[in-house]
Image 1 (cartoon, rainbow, N blue to C red):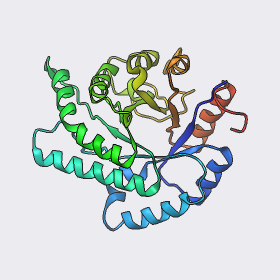
Image 2: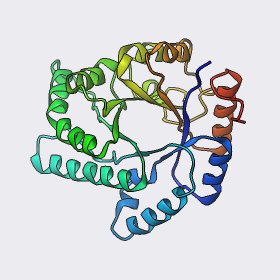
Image 3: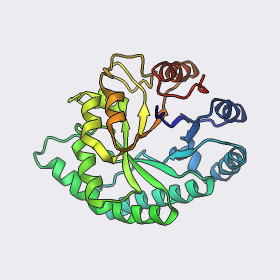
Length: 267
């Protein structure tokens, strides 16, 4: 039976965490490089050196979350767009130096009452991303476009499909579909809607109000048909456990193993 490639998102990647993940046989998504605090000139060099040293003996796949605070790919002000591009191009360079071959960005949809808002959102995204995608192709790094407040998978699908690059795919954040949207579409519908564009999943849950980052077995989200939908895709997406506590991580990992989605080595 095919198994999922599993990683876990961590903010503080320590020697203890690296050793634990090596023993479990899972990968890591580095999230510190998404935060302005750690990207400041007085913090970044040390963080980069420390992380590079830790990864020198790390066995699993490495991915990274890029900056998302204040990033607005559909900004009207060209100076704002230029700042976004600089931050994202910086992230590509950092990911390459760290050996991360997948990099997550947000589309950062903001709900709006205007009838043509969704159309404008997609058109502006289509103007923004090609330059970033070409840079990703040069680095041979795959970009993952993550849903936040998007009410439908069609919004991301309509961005990714015309650009049509194997280096630009979708990241489905399970928790965001439940706490950040009024539509609250079932997760199986998100999987079906993203289809072949889906390559990466942030796996967590909540109670529908806050982005709690609980184990996917907790909260009140309905995962009915979700994993079956993933298994029906031509290529299974990577699963990234994105939770806030060690206990939630262990609960998620154990649930995945009991469901038969992981090799027996995952304990």
